[in-house]
Structure formats: structure tokens, C-alpha cells
Image (cartoon, rainbow, N blue to C red):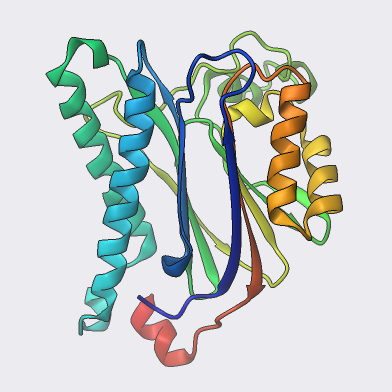
Length: 268
């Protein structure tokens, strides 16, 4: 594993006020510099199975892939975090499909996923579905993932405004999920980190209850204490209805490991 930037993590997941069980799942691996969040779907307890399987399988795969970066390799053989994420999510998709085929109760199960991998001074975000990633930089909050949902497609086409979208009855209809088809399309983007950045991964149980300005205010005021910030976001989402499971992962960039020229050549 390459030298990592120094990241500080916190997380919280909550059942909410309406659901009978929690179908969200989180895995954080500070020593390897990654976090995974999933929001499951499906009848009975299938969504819970799909989300937990996905975060466990993806995290295990990422640990193994990163461990292999210690092996000698030529520049053109170098692995990349973009490929790690794609391979890990594809593997989870295959295993969830196999699990669903073994038990009729699990038919139709699937999950969203959002994965954040720190690699030197970069952050690689991969996602499927409408679980999101945000970045607070210089007191401004920005969504850095693009929802794979019917509503987002309508927004992109200019059929509905962002203001009206908050109240749309179809905002939870997603167009991609892990475990829904034989092939899964993972959207992967690279971001340059800066010291002081705060990143947030979350399920739609948070963003359906709090708008971006509310999220920004909490992160601005409580970002110095990440765990308190997580707990407050969950509390406020429940105060606004708690209609779904709510999950949040926060991490701050305390120190960057910038790549030397040789590290850049062999890591790119």
C-alpha cells in the first residue's frame, strides 16, 4: 500500500423513525485509507443482506488489491485505485446475484454503493445509485457524485427544477444498483484533495430529510468534531421525519502525502 494522507474518520448509522430494520451498511478502514457505504433494497431482509455483503466484499477486495501494490511491477503494470474500485464492485455484484438466486426471499435484492479511496494526494470516488459524496472546502459544500436516478435524469433534461425535485414522489427510483443486473456500471471520479477538506458519504435517508444548505451549516459549525457532526446530522434527519435509514461517514484531510516524481511515475 502506498503512503497515505492522514485522514480522520467518523461515522453513524441509524434505523430512522419509520423502518423496522436498518438496510444501510458502512465499513471504514483508516489504515488503508478507504470507506464504503451502502443502502440496500429488496423485500423481507434482502436489502440488509445485499448492503452488508457489498461493503464486506468490497472492503476485503480493496485490502487485498492495495496489499499487492508492495509487489514489484513495471510502470505499465501498475495497479490503480480506479481499477480496484471497478473490480471490487463488479465482484460484489456477481456475489449478490448468486446469493439472490439461491433463495426466493432474496429475489430482487440490490444496493447502492459509494466508495472513497485515498491514494497519495488523490481521492477516488466510485458510486452506483443515489448514495452520495460531498466535499466541504473553504466552508462551501459541494456534491461530487451524480445520482443514478430517474429524478436526476429529469433534472438533467430540464424537466424539473432542483427546488421542485426535493418534493418529487419519484426521487427514490434509481437507475443503477449493485445486484440488479449481470453487469454493473460504476461511475468513478478522481479528486485532488487539499488539507482541511471534509468529505461526507451518506445514504438518501439523510439527503431526503436535509437540503444542501442545512448540511453545509452543520458541517461548517461542527466540522471540528467529526463524531459530533455525524450524530447531529442523524439527529436532525430524524427531527425532520426520519422516513428512512440514515447513514453518514465523515473524514477530514489533516495532512497530505504528496507524490514525488518517481512515486507519480510508478503509481499512475
